Image 1 (cartoon, rainbow, N blue to C red):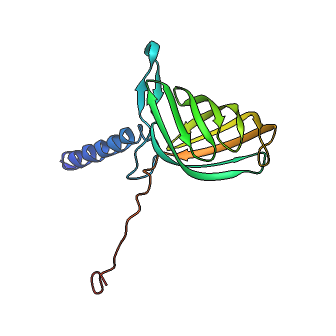
Image 2 (cartoon, one colour):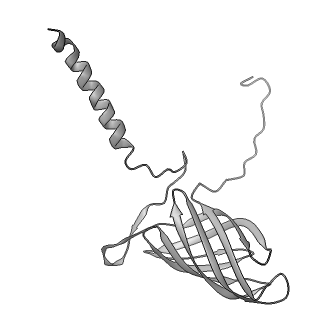
Image 3 (cartoon, one colour):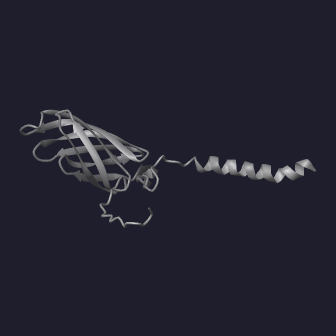
Length: 167
């Protein structure tokens, strides 16, 4: 009689543990309320992460330059392109979670660099190496790095507090 009384509770507890375990298997470690990169079908039956959208970005290079802003990327299958004002234009491909690209520098510097990047959770981190021409702050040989996120781009809002509400 004792086993019959506890069996339903044991089965329910085991079921909850299985659901918790299975539910965590697909966790991409993305921030709450923010989109994660999603797989995009690629050519040849492969796949690639979708990096399209407007994202927050920071960058720095070996010439002492750095900046931040928004990068806007478009993607068709596993080919992407985009622009970051103050740095240049990106064009490349995505294979799985890996990016390879060419960066064309924008004014005041001219030149190109090639690089690689990786999508990890909700972030893309990359490095590049190339050459530049132009007056300072440009330098002949340049290396750099950047990072952008998949969190939704903040939308500026104006909040007017209402006295006496919620206090």
